[in-house]
Image (cartoon, rainbow, N blue to C red; front, side):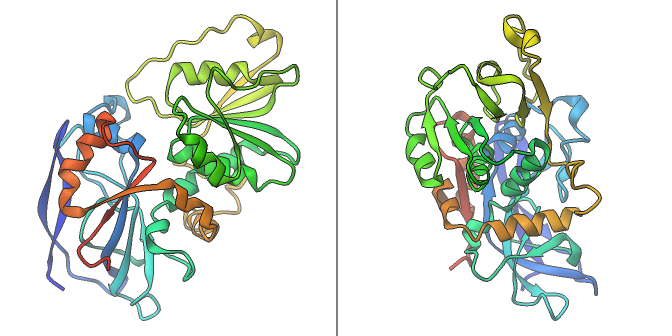
Length: 330
């Protein structure tokens, strides 16, 4: 394989380009991965593309194999699936997932890749990073058998959370989104659907609400749907946007809560028993479920990525998870 690859860079906020990258020599503990598919994390990556990462969050927001710095030039991304071309004998020829930016090939330590199960299609496997976020969220939320749950926001993270919640026995899960077309997606995930104006409000309320819409209106609705003494699990990343909430009404009298969850740390409930690699391996195992294919809503070639990112960022290209196919993906 050539020692030169191509990578996608955010050259400056709002503009991306493909650049050549010289690959390092493959060491005894490294792997050379030829990329098959990558996925665009529409929430976080479009924030990065627009230059909306707050300066005080630059260090926190760094991706594992990022190059450059915010707001740019920066090579950013973390949903990559490929085939190991060189490396330890047990890994050569295996399909692997890595938290690597969009790049045709790359060299990373062998410990930075996780083997994709044979019965998980490589394109579906790009969802591993998002399912990992959902796994961490469920560890934080600790849903119980028979819970009534709402997930507000039907993006990648919200949909993955909803699917995992639906597998808890006896749960009643409703996915809430302003986009009525997400009703079909919800059906594919085996959960209910409602628009914000139509979502059922009753005396019992929801035992748990997970918020992923990254809007103040979505967070306000999440609080309104809670049962007394229940909690909103907040997964949204707002960048440098401010959120205003009305915390009068029943917020105090019902002792409602808002709790943050973020994938950068293993949830406290499992921190002593799971490493990051084990959590990611669990996410890949859960992706044996074909229901997740409903989240793969479009695909473009790697060469098109500089034109695709602006359209994803401004919403002119609707997507849940838009995947990128590489020259050797066939």
